[in-house]
Image (cartoon, rainbow, N blue to C red; front, side, top):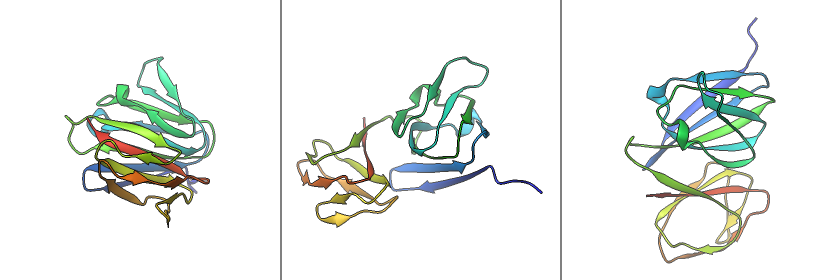
Length: 158
């Protein structure tokens, strides 16, 4: 009988794609360069590393937003040390570039962009968010944040 090792998901949103991988420890996941449009990988839990195939350079994941632009359009491998849940933020078009920042407190939006809740139940302007809630934020608006146990990312197109 085959044991569960890794599940993969993909969701197309208005201006970006979100992928997700959930798996156990000691898992090796390969991705072909044709499908590798991931700009940021957001680690909820677990540990592992990602790198270009047959290369000694890699990035070790930590909870939060991890910049993986250097591996865009490259053949990659991900190796998990322990059970993990990771999201990927991908551009819809290969020519697009995005910036990302982890939001931990209230802020005034200085550029139009997408706020995404990756984990927990943070409160934004008196509304409790759940995992994978997302909203387009407009420039000049104030956003009151109570992060609690949440993980929020704010993504803007460059």
